[in-house]
Image (cartoon, rainbow, N blue to C red; front, side, top):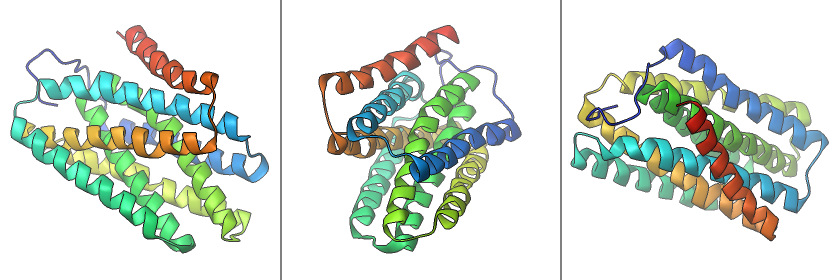
Length: 243
């Protein structure tokens, strides 16, 4: 990640290590799939956990990715990368309103997993610390992706075995995104800044248009709203403990 020496870049991990770490969110997605098969939490509990996950993801975006971009070498690359990120996220949102059927829903979630993997890989390209904190944030987010896909496929009368197999297969696109990020990390600092801007927009989209929107549809209460700030503070504490 390009910087002026003021960023929190640390010792970078190898691509192989980053790929292995990316399997943690994949495991979370499968766990979410099994959870939906045997136990579906009530609306308030679901909303509370989604608020918590949103707080963690937002803290990762604001506390780790944004400070890195403030010291990037090119404003134009940030503007272009961020604009592309906005266009892609809006296209995904529009596609989500149009898709129908198991195949279409699965393809949409698969795209989400791929982008999450890219974001995670870019995090490790910035520093080990950023990558680890993004792993925590995206693991919670991906957990609900697996849960959501399971529930939607269940409504389409897909068998439980087929659902688990689908979630596991789709989840493997996350490491693919991480591998792609390993290639991107070799680009010039100017181009890399654009990809980080894309990653920042993607994280903010996850918070504002996915996690929080679904959370408020599930239910709301003061203690549920407080879970957003609990998740935000948790990642700040982990950030401080990691130095």
